[in-house]
Length: 318
Image (tube, rainbow, N blue to C red; front, side):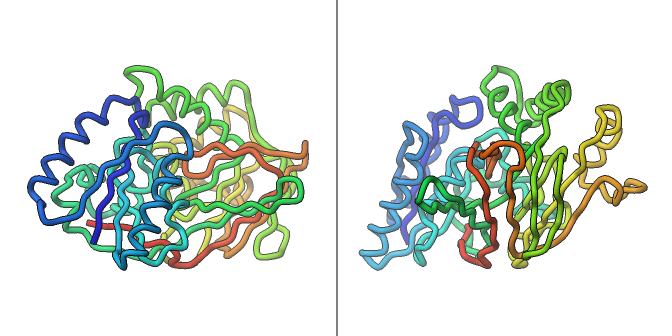
């Protein structure tokens, strides 16, 4: 088995890379007989290309490899896209980003996610196959695809995630704190989306909405439990749409939404539509493109098809 640590020095609020590097150096000394490499990203897309090369090199040598993402959900998403399709490559997580929602999902009801910062414990992990969501869209005459491990957020939730990503760059603002501030900022501007959504080939929602989510995992925004019934290995996407509503109404419902208890709200069926599906199509009704967030990565495309690829990605668990 090979081990590779890809460090994003800009994840979270930055500054963690030197500490991580020291910890990895100690790990290499403790595991002198193991093949352990350290790599750094310099710009967006580096983690994808690095992990692709590492997985291919290991495959040619007949080795398995765990590629650890030392960053947040965006870095993990890049690495997942780099190793997707390689039978010998496993996604590992060292959560030093702001949100870390993929790890939160892995440890739900088990242990605190910061256990994943213990590198010695990580070396004793084991792989588990999880589902991924494959996103397909068209640019010109070219069909493009990428995967999301955790969630896709459109409308209010996606706009909030974009704004939270900007706020996380500010000193003294935590991941969850940035999300709350972004919620308030986005709420003031009342940004939503207008979509046509089909689910497994049948109409699901059409018109103005506050937000839409396709979830493989249950968390978004640094611990917001938006899809409380999600499981990463059940072959299903948790599809949710929330109708446009007044600011006061949303503020009153947000605490339960954040805690994963939205379905405890009386009359929830009047404003929320929820279904477990294998495929969903999101089509913008106002304009040719829409902005959304996939595992913390901001995207802007036209119509997208999202389909589950069951147990297509090995992930390293402790």
